[in-house]
Amino acid sequence: MSKLKKEDILNDPDFIKLSSQKNTISIILTILELVLYFGFIYLVAEGKPFLSQKMSPDGAATIGIPIAVGTILLSWVFTGIYIWWANVKYDELVKKVIEKVGG
Image (cartoon, rainbow, N blue to C red; front, side, top):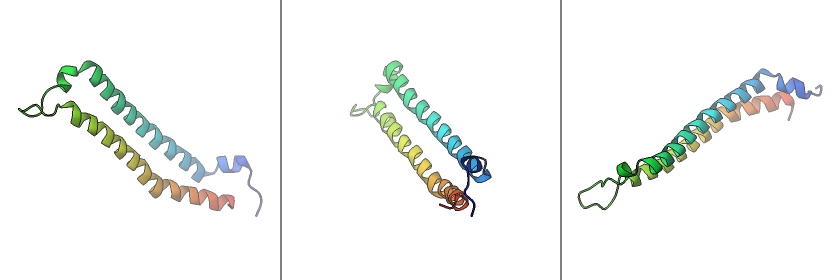
């Protein structure tokens, strides 16, 4: 088997597909996470009257608590989406490229 050059790998259709998909999912999830995080920070800074509203008549908890917990949980969901994608799609494409390279 002939030795592949760096250019051969970079021009390989499977490698291009791999790189494109990884960039797409990474950019989408990064944007979603930034909107989520900075949206929450903005809400904390500018929406104090809203966040301080009581959820129950006895006033034990405010609306801000479940929103904060939801922000953390949604971050975990975004991470889970990336892990699922990496296991299902990314690893398969990496195997194809490695087989072509001879690794």
